[in-house]
Image (cartoon, rainbow, N blue to C red; front, side, top):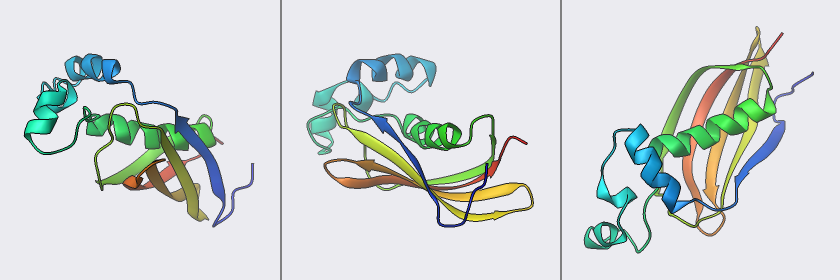
Length: 131
């Protein structure tokens, strides 16, 4: 497969962030923060009226977009930035663009967006495509 600088990669879409899944992830991530589990805790902190998705899951959505676009590849490195919260019930889209191609590596920019509110996370990643 040929990849080119500026190429837009297919999006990875999460139609609805499942609040029930956050409960399972809280156990898996050893993250008992009540903002992931209890709307009352979110309201008490002035953060809205829906539970908030765990940050590592949001990063995983961006990683899934990359691995979907580069089957069999490995992510050599990735830096991410949290711009806003992701809330239960939201539709989220991870999209990526190739920034550079060379020496067996592909550099990409990735964005995670709420359909209703815009960018919530961003990342830069270096991909080692399958040879």
